[in-house]
Image 1 (cartoon, helix red, strand yellow):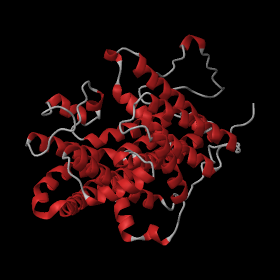
Image 2: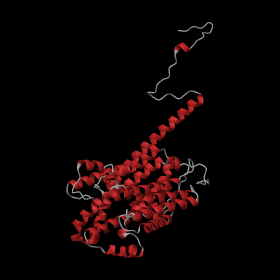
Image 3: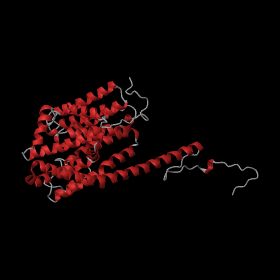
Image 4: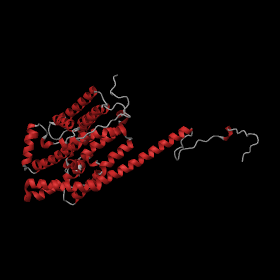
Length: 413
């Protein structure tokens, strides 16, 4: 069987790929997500409009052929970046260290946003993102671990956080597939496409009481992550071209399957949308022009996660309060200013301290692991067995099988 890899050993061959355009991609993704929710709200919920929505609709939907409201465009860019940036870490880092970095990065800000969402619902300021009038204590507790999305009917206290379920699934998939990632990494996106297809088939053909609709949503979104992973493997030279093509075809088939089964929620233009997004990522991902160094690009990219978490908590109430006095454009500007301020606070007071704490903790664990390995190596070189773990049974030798010969002139005390 021909080798899947052009390198002999990926244990030491997970090279860094400089994604100099990553911040610009995050900026585009943030704009797309903000626009998508503004457009959904003004057009579908309020039945009104805005001149900017008309311009975008004519340019990107009618001419460009993208989804209505640019649905999924920003989300898919974020997911593709996850696949590109996380795969190398999954190959190089130990599973515990990898999960600590990943979960430690997303959970603190997520928990704060969920807490704020629950408080706003219970104060009557905001409504739910699903059909319920309120949230029970059990449902609130489940929301802190994304459990509400897996209930039937779904309970969403902060709707946008469903994408974190996709990321968490990918993190744990990388841990489970780590031996494969360190030997034949291109197998992971191919096998992942097959597993996601089985999930879609399960939810389509299994009787309703036993289906899990959220799993279909995750499975239909995973191609964006796998496409990012494939791009990293291609740019890093960790897979041969023919297998890159096979992996890409697998994702295309999965997207088409999800479209045919109507798993996607904004029409049937997803395959084209995926193509456009992938093209944008390929063209921008390694771009290093002056635009990537603009202050507004850097600021937005650094706070993209915070913006993503809080913007829907702010949009509807701020718009309703200000639209009569400021008009649609003024209300949107007021929403953007409020979102920027809240995102800055979440970034500075939650994300940054949490990231520093996780980095310090990871460094401590790394140093302990390094010292333990050095100690074990030194003992092995001396021929002394490493000490047994605390609590391990100590082997006993029966005294009746031991003979001690006293040397002449010696004494035993």
